[in-house]
Image (cartoon, rainbow over all chains, first blue to last red; front, side, top):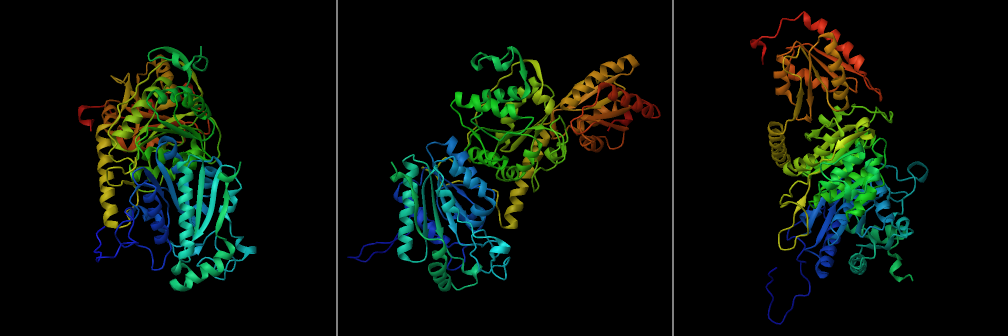
Length: 256
Length: 375
């Protein structure tokens, strides 16, 4: 990347090498771009660009391979953890990363993520939870909060009718094969910085050969939530983060 | 001795042993250089998975019993996307679950071999031998415009030989390949001359290995712009046309001067063979046309063979599926009769012989074949 730097100034923030120099297809204000950037930064800092094989989901982030400059395979909807298992088993030297949304991971792909975690597969899973099906137009997801309106819960999600939101990462964290589970957010600079630390730790755990690591990132979907980007960030911070609380949920590297 | 009692290192190419079909296919895959196996238990193929569970770790190669057939086939998708030689096996209901990933693999051009040890359907059906998944294997399986080569062994020895051929086809054309066996082939034991062959490895300049020192690669089936997807589909169709032109296989027995021809594959062909030998007592000369590739179907060869005979009998372990391809190949030039049983029942040689006698009656009304009748 070439930057004209005036004399006496120094560059303290630039595009990571692994992030493509192009605008994305994501809607204005969408959190996926931030998560992509964090992944590109972490993979670059750990020197993993040349040995990463990543798995793209079905959903808004299917085009992750257009923006993050590593080898990618596209998984059928929800199957990324199984696809990644296959890669892991035949490529012991690869760094294997999955990227899934909440429809992909928490609905259609529940079996695959639970069993990959149960086997303690040596994978780093990134789970972007914006509480809605974005790509298909804003339908209810398993993670949609009670009361939240969507195109398929137009009166708002009701527990008695639609069931309760599923806390996937807490569910995964109780399994012994899960070495690390954390939840970050893209609400502001501070939470984004912390999310990057979680992602970095989840990658290091794979490099250390310890086992399965997952980072959920609660994110916003301004279009799916029918909000301006600013309103969506406020809701992420003030409402979503109260239900899906950011922080480290389990870290078994600190046990025994 | 059965194969199960012989240490694997004493199983040598060319030796004659008593083997169970499922285990023979599994060992043939290992000797063909299968790098990884992913499966899920289902009857009547469970011994294939069990053989791999024991043997793959001995060879230092991955074996995973997945959480479902969806899990197994998607593990295969991931492993094969890195250029590994991958085998998956299942039986009919499990094969249905795998249709999604097979479509993705056909679209993304990922090689893989999938064995279907067919059982009776529809639904949970039963566990007896069947050929009821012919349509599924040859006419679609998953969604979208695609074909996959379908190889149909009719003996355990042939199943072993076709395993290496299947990997070779899969990698040469970058496509999933079906081996369509049935419960009889999977469960039966018979003396067999061991047939092991490891196909040469091709340069996988498309496969994922990490983008060290080269631009990143993407293995995908998504092409959101219709213009791009059409170009991709035209590329796939050209490949399918090439396979159809080059890879047709069939075997003929006693076709010279045959009055009637039986068309049958797999276990049905073995029943047909017995019926054909009994038909000699009726002074009825019958030949056997046995497709080995069900797709591409040997249509041109069959049309030529049928033109030399008075009638054609199709025998299947189904209500009649391949018979449609036979009729398409023969285009009404000869009477085509059908004999089949379903649900795990196998036609007896006597039933097939009766069908031959009925067909002779029908065909006798037709003029003797002439040169002009040849297509």
